[in-house]
Image 1: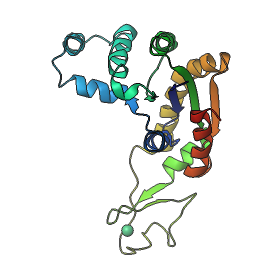
Image 2: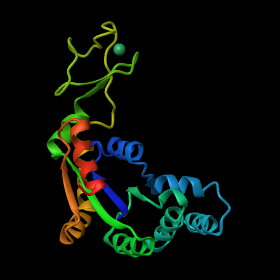
Image 3: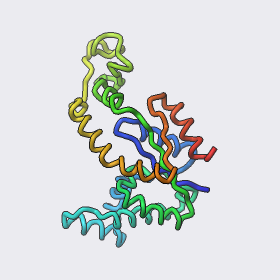
Length: 217
Ligand SMILES: [Zn+2]
């Protein structure tokens, strides 16, 4: 049976990389609500106008409206064989509505969590250093440069660190993620559809596990 893959993972867990690999290797399109709303902003469809009116009034986009937007997008031809959802559902209310869409479209829902402990996510972000010359990315915990805080190829240039990647800010981001995602994890766990994949390994090892879930083997 074709699948709707609900892909979940904390900021920095590597979910985006895995979504891209599933798309490339299994031909399943990646449907992101962010992308859909950006596309709607340029569209003149009745649904797009309705979304604009809600936004212009300064109101929150309701679950009911989000689900209609997702339904319209996933009824397109490229989603026939299944698709990956990124950033949706965000609430158990949306998850319940997704069940209806899945039944209508004849897909089964599978949730995959790219699971990385929070202390490691914190090190991934706080330890990240970038060479401003070549863009090479280092990590002082996992992939340090040969010499302190300079690029191996550009020893005259100090590595840079993003201001948002402080421990305090990351803890806030992860706490928000946890608060938002916990009910969804419970929701899919409760119906035996949650697959946890160890996201601390390299990209290919993570992907190998995900591919088994996607193909149902
Ligand atoms: Zn460099």
